[in-house]
Length: 228
Image (cartoon, rainbow, N blue to C red; front, side, top):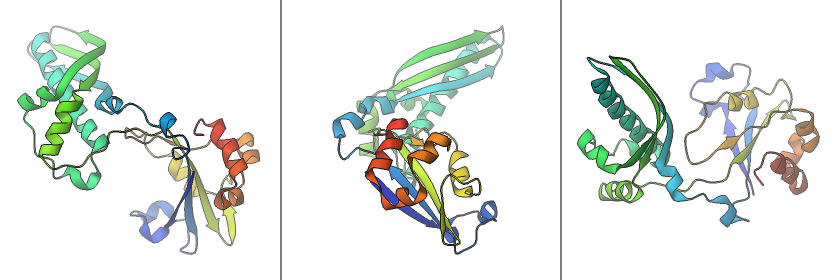
């Protein structure tokens, strides 16, 4: 499947970051995925959305035991925040009722300790927090909060820039692809893959072929990045 998302410079919040663009330049993103053709291969288990990995905590207190309690409290709160950012639409997150820690722990089914270090007054750890899927679902539904929990297969993004009647994809002057490459790593349900732009990519597909939706060329580059 190929989706096109045209953007105009006027819609970008911080235009100073795009000073090299003129208002005649059109930014287009081509998303490549196959989830309409192979739905059973695309959708991950919903439970995976309720596991928050690699939470780092570091607390100091009068004793290691107190520091550990503080760290685990903070770790679960951070994990809960990341969970909501992952499964609840941005426009609904402000509607979520505040949750006391005593209620939050009722949503947690377990904590996996990846790393632990301690001193007489300090505790450091890296943890994975597993949330109870049913409990979280019920909590959000009772609060009338919409949510999504199905993680899709990775999407390949081909950022095409139209400038001065020419299309740019792999060109060094394509600032649009640089913007996508500099985006922070996503913790959401969709993993976006940005091509590296090496010789194999250049040979695989041209900007014109990307915009036209050339199935063979799209299949070639999608297979290379595991999004077919």
